[in-house]
Amino acid sequence: MSFETILYEEAEGVATITLNRPDKLNAVTARMLAELKQALARAAANSDIRSLLLTGAGRAFCAGQDLSDRTVSAGSGGARPDLSKSLSEGYNPFILSLIELEMPTICAVNGVAAGAGANMALACDIVLAARSAKFLQAFAKIGLIPDSGGSYFLPRMLGLPRARALAMLAEPISAARAEEWGLIWKAVDDDTILLEATTLARKLAQAPTLGLALTKKAMLASYDNSLAEHLALEAEYQGQAGRSDDYAEGISAFMEKRDPVFRGK
Ligand code: T3D
Image 1 (cartoon, rainbow, N blue to C red):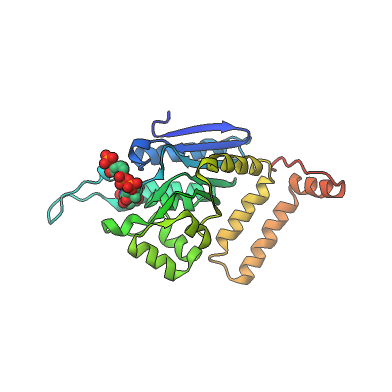
Image 2 (image 1 turned 135 degrees about the vertical axis):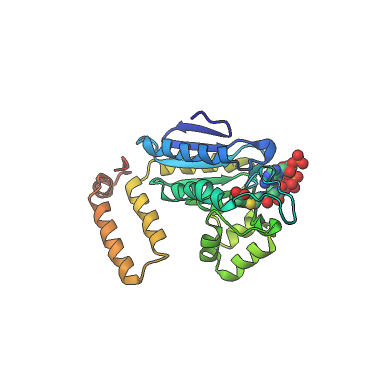
């Protein structure tokens, strides 16, 4: 598939995906979701790629679903789009693929992130946001519920009081507030966000990839496990990590007082 709505680039161990409909604030279409899934599969299939960076072209990160694809007549009798199908066939497989990707994912929120656009960003492992960016759970403004994992992750990240208010009031919060609340890693200056995010992605592309993949899986599983179940999972994953070449390299490098060279396996 050649890409029309995103840009995809591989360099220095990093796959960079740029949402690329800047005149529409990178609003999401079915085509974009298909391309995003294809891009994730491409990154996952290349063993030289060890981190992923997601960002947006132009002044926005992403305005969520392209609402011009959803014009319906109000009142009874008008045809209604099947949003359940849109989620189960479009958004949900993308969010799951993003979360389950076995490499660190970094999001550079370069501008406003609204609706599914906000929750796509928040599904990444490390989120940087430009100081001018805003996060908006826009769904209530159009009668919808937070999707793309919003109603799952927001209460866990923020606690119910803040999650409910963000969703029900649909008021934007600044990058600084998002950082203060622990929704993102940090807010950074607008003119350096891409540089900082790329530097971070390149650093993570040199990290012990298998260990990071197991770290992500363990943290996600902690949402559902009892302590006993989770300790057992940690033992299993630590066993896997301990058999990796990167662990052997980490120990050697420590003993030899040098920087480790991790190969990601
Ligand atoms: O449908 C399904 O499959 C279910 C899944 C749903 C997932 C969702 O994401 S639902 C939520 C959809 N998104 C929204 O409701 C957000 C709508 N947009 C906004 O609230 C605002 O545009 C922003 C807060 C994002 C940005 O505001 P601002 O003032 O910076 O820009 P603007 O002037 O509102 O928008 C600039 C242009 O982009 C404008 O077009 P124009 O007038 O210049 O021709 C605007 O219509 C367009 N635009 C912005 N968001 C969308 C959009 N066009 C289509 N779809 C959009 N989501």
